[in-house]
Length: 210
Image (cartoon, rainbow, N blue to C red; front, side, top):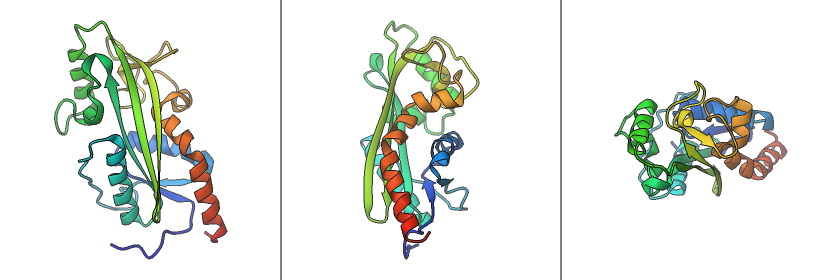
């Protein structure tokens, strides 16, 4: 499918099939005037081989694929959790730490198992965003440091949230309110870094009469 042009409307497609990520982007970008779509919302079959060697490469692959499919500006997100005692694992393989197709619960259990005998529990959540619109690409990064707790706590969030406690907090990501999590999280910080570019893009769309 070839786009004739990017539609000049305040819509953006987030290149993910992960409902938790999509909900976070809606909370983060909705107040900025964006209508956030996912490929699933648009009835599109979206599958990308995350073959990149870095977060940025994977985010770019996803952003370009989603933008071409939807004929909309796109945000590609690649993120992971890096644990110091494991040499930065799971990193790029965070979503597949317990094997291809593993559930969030299985990935968390695998990480807790590998850290069972470790005293160093330091970890860092990383998010890299690639914003693509027409032929323009921009890259943004967000990080949050913290520790991996001994057992799961909290019913909110997704992924590794129930076992990650941000620095300076007494609760895990899964125990925090959505508002506090969005302010502290790696994804929230990456979106904050991207806001000037997103505002410029929205302004340019409005000037084109979207």
